[in-house]
Figure 1 (spheres, one colour):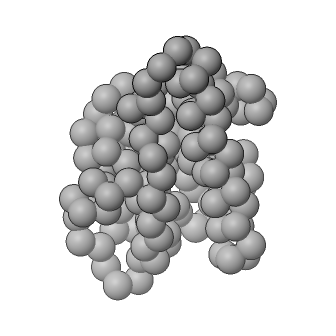
Figure 2: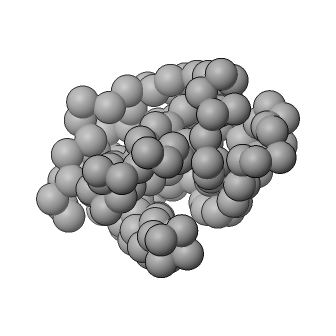
Length: 137
């Protein structure tokens, strides 16, 4: 079974949504996990916009990067520059991808405006995971 690890700063939004899509689209042939450079807790807006597309991530939780797990992965995907820059060194066998996505947790404005940003990021993550499936098949 292949392993994929999605990394972000706080493991609260982008990496959690990526984990949710990957669990839905890559299972059962991939082991999927996410983590962060820091732990910020699972963002309620990320849970809400994923539920809109039928994926429940409410049981997921924010975790710190596990170096041992990281070194066993086939693919590591960073979803922000902070995670890319602070990610521990991995063996040459680990394929690294970077998806530079805006942090939806930084969105301002009304609740509807903030959710719109979460939806845009969610949809981009879905497209990226679908592309990953094609490239890694």
